[in-house]
Length: 293
Image (cartoon, rainbow, N blue to C red):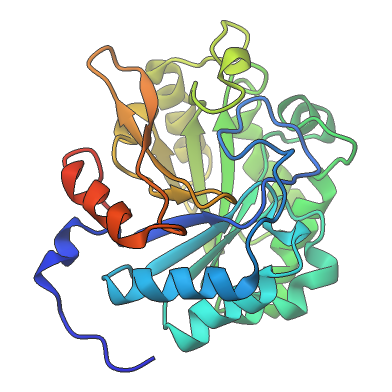
């Protein structure tokens, strides 16, 4: 890759980018603000590698492979390995774990941080949050145990979205992990307030799904009290303004901005795949809206 030197303009660049190689996913989570699941893999591995190289040379240090479900596309392994080995980027993989057992040997050796979603202490509650043809509850638990046994150098984050269907069950999730042999002291547990944005916002933005800030803080407090060895973080959506720089399968980039009414909105940040220089200019023009992870 060559030596990367400091650049004074790096302060306005995202330190981490979220990349969706595909929008395809086996689940249909109502709160998902990722790409529409009908959008598949559009660009090839060489195009994604070239884009990551440009971001790395512009100051970006990390990449999160998300979706859709990233394990459904054949190019993930090659692009992930390139980001880690050739670009020395910190790599994060966010997956529903359905295909992890089959693919982990081709992925996890090049992953720094693995994010796995678990939104219920039972398959029934988890299914309320993550409907679809496949139940990923068992896959997530097996994935956690796999990482703890075979990939001790991979940082492991278990993620739970707090919403109306599971708000009274969140505090039971760590106990389910304990019952299945998970070492809680070796994971990070991140809670997310359900966020009314994305292609399914008309579903999320209802009393059936939304959880207030105070309710989420109470859930966090209960979890901390029950499991003192567990590292717990709560992300309220009012704190997501400028937090993400996400690139979808079409190459379009977007960020999140919380308006004066406290409502999150998606902000168009150009298309770095088709016009990288213009996308950087967009970042500069909206630098007050875009911070870093």
